[in-house]
Every structure is written in C-alpha cells, then in structure tokens.
Image (cartoon, rainbow, N blue to C red):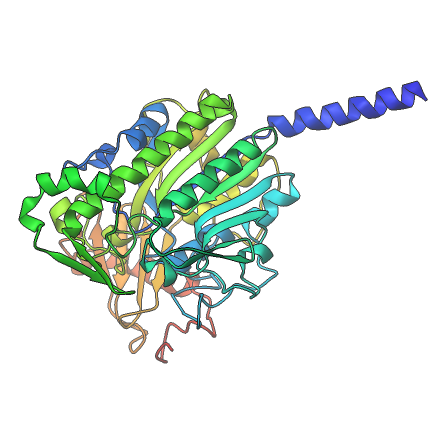
Length: 459
C-alpha cells in the first residue's frame, strides 16, 4: 500500500514538474495604436519606457502584421489562426442591443487548445466576437475567466455603465476609468495562477475611439500641447473631451505604466524567466475622437491608417520578451502576422498545431534557430469602402480596390524595400510580378456567405 501511495505521489510530482516546465503566455494587444506610437519604434512626442524596456530585454519585429485593419476580423484572425480570406469574421458587424455577430461554438481557438493542454486561460479587455449569451460569448470560447467589454461599440467610452465578468454584467457608475479596472483584474489573474501554466490575453482598449484619460496623466501634455486646448474631441455616448491630443498622450502614458506594473509582477512572483510576453496592436492608428495621428506621426514612415490595407493600416509592432530564451535587444525583419500566433504558442506549449491554420510558428526566430520557415505570401481582404484585397510577397506589396463591383480590378504594385511609404505604383514597370501575384488573390480567398467579397453590398 505504501509503495502504491509513493508511486502515485511520484506520478503527481512528475505531472506537476511537467506542468511547471510549460511556459506561461501573456499576449498584450493595444487597440488602434500605430506602428510609430511607441518610442522604440520612433515616437518623439511622448515616451513609452516600459514597452521600450521589453524591446531592450527581448526582440523587436519590424515586419509584423495585424490580422485585419479593423477590430473584429483582427481578433478572429488572431484567435483562430487564419487570415481574412479564410476567417469566419471578416468585418465589423453589430448586433443589438450589445455585441457583434458571433463566432460559432465549435471554432478552434487558441484558448481552447491551451486549456486542453492544461493551461488556465484568462482574457481582460475587449472581445468583439459574440454578444452575451451567444455562441461567441467568451464563456463559450475557452476562457476560464473574462473581464471587460463584450462589445466594441460599448468600448467607445472609457467610462461605461457596465462591464462583464464572465457571464455576469457588472454595473458601474459611469465615472470609473475602465482601463484601470481591467488592468487590476489582469494582474490578479496572473498572481492567482502563478503556480501553474496560464495564458493571459490582454486586448486592452487604449487608445481606441474616445480620447479619455484621468487628468493626472493628461495635465503634463496640456502644458506641452497648449495649441490644442480649444479642440473638442467628440465620439459616441455624448463624449466631449478638451484637448484630445493631450488626452491621447496621457492614455499612452497610462497604458505603458501598466505594462511596467505587469513586468514588475512577473519578477516579484519569480516567473519572468518562464513567461513569454508578447506586445502588439490590432491595426493602424485611428482618426476618431479628436485624435491627430499625423501630428504624432503615429504610422511612422507608412502610408495609411485604420481601415486601409496600405502598410499604415496593417503593419503593427510586435515585441517579444522571454528572459534567457530570446536574445536581449535583438531585432527581426521576419515577415509574420497575427495568424502566426496559434502555431507559435502551440509549439511552445508542446502541442500539435491544428491543420486549418494559415500560420507559421515564429519560434525559430524567437530562439535564434536557423530553420525559420517563411510565408509564400501574406493576404488580407477588407469588407468596406467597396472591398479591398492586399498581398505581401517578399518585398512586393499588391493591392486591388473596389473589387465588390469589379472582381477584375487592376492591381497596384509597390516595392516596400525601396518605397516603404507606397508612394509609387510600379505595376506597369513589372508586368511579370503582377502576373505572378494576380492568381494569389483568388487562391487566398474562400467565399463567405456572411462577408461576400464580390457582387453584393454588405449589410
């Protein structure tokens, strides 16, 4: 009997040790911040010292891409591991009174995969993939804990009347800054699960939509940008903000400080060396609520903003930190995208990658291995403004506009190596390249009844 108990104890200990060897994952995704909105990517008008701290301790990617150029399809692409030519959600589609059109209950998502592998999963921030009670509700999509906004539209204010904790509506006074509540819950989740593998997905809302921030972080920038003090920023929910330019800088400062608190917590809990932290944005910079991305040079050298498939709408930061595994201060020009996260986390967790994914693990890049596979091409489609398609193939970038009414729309071609700002359409000079890329627009696109690319206007 004693031998049986001892054997059982050793098995349990072995399982515990095996579980502890699995790395924790923290994936932070800010909302509508541009490629140039961080000082380590060139921002000059405010500082992001803690995001810079991540870059100094880990790897900064220079050619990483969002799943889409707007919220919901980016999140679907990220969590399901596919580009928008294959995604279930390919555009923002509202449902009333709250939420977005839901993803199906049987969709394969990162939290479901990691949960099956023994991870505790938590999401803190903005969802956008299914209304409360629907198949797409976070509680039906693999999350052990969810706290934040279910609905993108509700996230147009940082002072909401309610948030959601799992399937419970949490009523608020409309005067509490939501980012702070969400941040506190994310830190508590990490602290509560420090002894076993966890996946924390933090799709935080700064700097989405309304330019709102507590005055303590705005005041220094009011002094720095007094020329905008008479500017009124307006958005939904009756939002009115004076000096939204100062508010944006304050929001980014507050967000960055929270990143520092998270990194400090990992050190306090002594789990930093076993935690992979990734930081990105969901798409390029927006122009709402009085925000002035051109003043801040938010897209850096890139053309376009949110809702564009030019580089400024889809090229986003990616910073990866994993002490002892990722070389400090390293920079990678590996071309990758949000849909690569699924195979990357699967490889790190030691589980099989689902066959449906369009992604390629970038673990070899993170760890300095020599066997990194490259994408043959990256693909996007955007279901607004007449519908647009885009392809990145090597240094070439190709776009087709207003394909809804013209499935054979001409291809615009740019060489990003010599023209990162996509200023010169050189399709006429390179017919051979256009001929090679043209079939890929059809190859990459699978028809969607909910999001038809050609011939019929979107609902």
